[in-house]
Image (cartoon, rainbow, N blue to C red; front, side):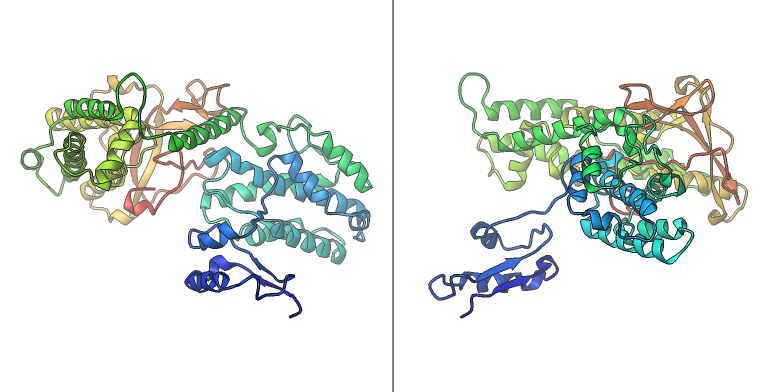
Length: 513
C-alpha cells in the first residue's frame, strides 16, 4: 500500500529460482499494485536470466568507461577535497591515491588488447578499488613507515588478485603493481611510463587533479600498459574482426541479383575441398611399418596421429558429400548440414569439423591449406622415416609427442620418467631444411612463433619486436631431456607456449589448452 521498492541482488547466483522470478514478475498487474512500486534486479550477464524480464524492464548497465582518461576522470569525480586530505600523511596519500586509480584504469583498459592484455578477460570492479583505497588509507595512518609490500600483496593477491585465475596473469598483475604502488611514486614527477606522459601530479585540490587528467591524450600509447607499440595494431585488428563478424552474422541468407546463387557457391566450395582432401591414412600399414616397441615411443605417437586425422577427414568427407546432396534435394537438410553449408559460405570452419579437429583460429580457406600441410607432414613421416626436425605445429596432440620424447630418453638410460624434464637450446645457426639427422638425445622442433618479442640471432637473446612486425619465427629448438634438471635462476625468460592466440582453453592434459 505504501509503494515501496524491492531489490533482488545477484540474480545470476540463483539460476534455479529464475523461472519462479519470471512467473512472479509476469503476475504483477499494474492496476493492482501501487503506482510508486518498483522492483530492482541486479545481475551479472547470464544466459539464464529471463528474457521476458529484460524485454519488459528498463535496463541499466554499469561498465567502466572506455579509455584510460575517461576512467580516471570517473574515479576522481567521485572524490572530494576532504577525501584528498583524509589522512595523517596527506601528500603521500594523494600520490598513492593517484597511483592506485591509474593502476585500476590500466588493468581495466588492458582488456581491449585481448590475450595480449590478459589471458582471461577479468571483470575488475569499482569495489576492488574502493576496498584497496580503504586499506591503503588505514595502513598509512597506522604505520610511520608505509608497508608497501603488504599493500601490494593485498591488492594483487586478495582484492584484485582474487579474480585472477591464470598463473601468467597473476605474474603480470604482481609486476604491474610495482609501477604504481611503491616508494618511488611518492616523489613528485615520478614517471609511470617511459615517455613521461603520465607522472605523479603535484596537485593539492580536486580541481587541479581534474585539470591535470583532462590534459592526458584521448588515446593512450601502449607504453602505459607495459606493452609494445605493435599492441595498438593488434587491438585495432581485434576490433575490426569483431565488427566484421557482427556484420557477417547479420547478412541475409538469400542471394539476389546477378551472379552465383548461395547454393552454387556452397556447392562449388564443397566440391573444391573434396577434390583436395587426401585419402585417409592406412593405420594397419603404419602400425606394421612402425610397430609399438619399448625403445621407440614415437611409433605409437605416429599411429595415434594417423587415427586422429582419419577421424577428422572422415567427418569432413561425409558432411561435404551429404551437404552437396542436400543442396540438390536428394537428402533432408538437417540442422547439422545447414551449419556446414552456412559456415562454408561465410568462410568459417564448421562447428561439426572444429569439434573433431585441433584448436585453430584460421578462417576456412587457410584452415584447409593448413590441414593439407599437416597431412603432408604425417605422410612424409610415414614414407620417409622419422624426421630430423619435427614440425610441432603439425601435431594433432603435441603433448603425446613431448611425452614420447621424454619416454625414449628415460627408457634408454633406465631413468624414472618423472625425474626427467626438458632443457631448451635455441639453435639459430641451424636451418630446418638443412638438418640431416636429429640429435642423439631429445629432438629438434620447428613451427613456433613469437608474439611481442623476437629472437635476435646476433646477440642470441630475446629482443623487442620490430615496428609493425607482430609475429616472428622462432629458430629450431633442441628439446634436450635431462634428469633432475634445475631451472636456471637468471638469464632466462619463463615464456609460456600456447596453441592459439587466445592463450587460454581447457586443461592441458586434454591437449586443447
